[in-house]
Image 1 (cartoon, rainbow, N blue to C red):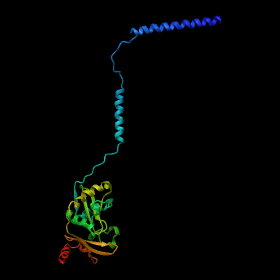
Image 2 (tube, one colour; image 1 turned 60 degrees about the horizontal axis):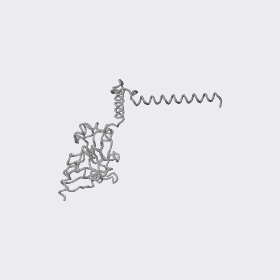
Image 3 (cartoon, rainbow, N blue to C red; image 1 turned 90 degrees about the vertical axis):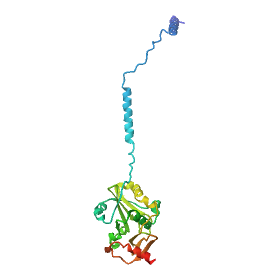
Image 4 (cartoon, one colour; image 1 turned 60 degrees about the vertical axis):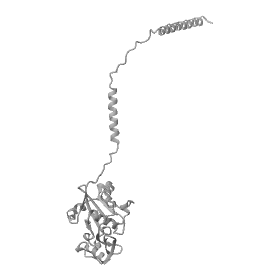
Length: 257
């Protein structure tokens, strides 16, 4: 072994012993507690982190609320006013200018499965005579098929909303059609329930008589309720300039029995 290698080995051994001795001394000092730091109480750091977190939390809540859909608007019918035949002229323009939304009898509620003639008798009991009938509409040869309506009830609900109830296809069909202003199309179910629900609460009906024109048969009828039964009597073309059929025809019918 060369002299250089011997010197290198001796130097490494001396370094090792110096390191070991230093480590032993450090361990003894640590065991005696001379290197332990003095305990100090916690102090609140001067930082805006808590304020920033609070502001971020508020912003997150505002963003969440903004993303939620608008709450469903409740709609309640507070008043129902029938427009009488005499008043109809004053309301003609209002009802003509409306962009209507219609609701038929596509569901299976009691009012939708009830005979239209029966509904007419119940409307007569609860609201009185219709606003318009075929007598006011004119002869069917000047009307479209869908405009041949036996009766129309015009209402103003909640003081300003125009609503119409009319027959579907004459007295022999079932259900009725309800129409309201287009902007209330999502409220039609509420309106229909408010205006018609009372009709099915009791079997109460009142006598009535209307003209009816059957478009398919090209024939005229007197249709109505005499207080006991519903009737349809075929007649000659009536003189509509004389107005609605006289209620006395109902009395005559009962006398004939």
